Image (cartoon, rainbow, N blue to C red; front, side, top):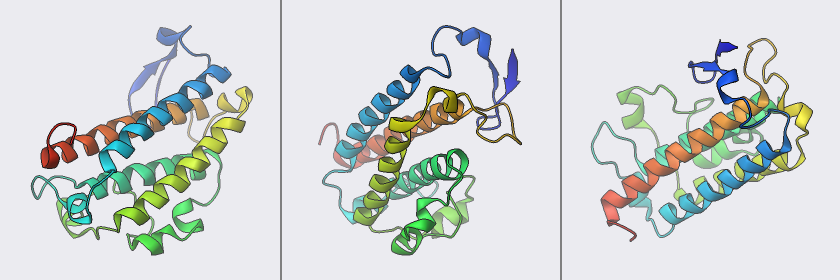
Amino acid sequence: MCTRSFVSGYVVCYDEFEGYFREGDMQLAEAIIKSLKQSGGYLSKALDGLTQKEAAWSPNEESNCIAFILWHMVRGEDFFVMRVIQRQTELYEAEGWREKLATPVGETGFGYTLHQLQTWPVPNLEILRGYAESVRNRTMALLGSVSPERLSELARPDRPPDTIADILCRVVTEIALHTGQIAYVRGIQHGINK
């Protein structure tokens, strides 16, 4: 069976993946937890020791800075976990992170224009890391308690075919992608393993 994913826009043929993960299988939640922990370790390594100036630096005017990539990554995780899966208010608003970060209301950075990127207010890195930690804690709590049946449910019944498992896999992919980007921008500034 092939369907178009509303999350990625790609056509996914589920029968090609038969036997890897069964969507109701708790092994999937465990694999996601393990992946998020690994990405979290890489992210911490990339962020540790950075100054505010380094977090705001970008290679050129059309590139993202570390702070923007981190904000965008965490906003995406918050959106998918809180709003889409749990159908609750995002922590960005519920816990006052938008005010603490002084970043735009209701935005995630997705599809930003060059002007929006250049005028984006770079938040304090430590506050941004606090937001990231809060969102990750909520994600891990969800994964630690989600039932196999819940993983197989449609994330948005009005927008099939993506299940909650599909959304969580997308979150893991986005986090790995953006963590690599953050490490790369740090490497440009600091060199290898510095």
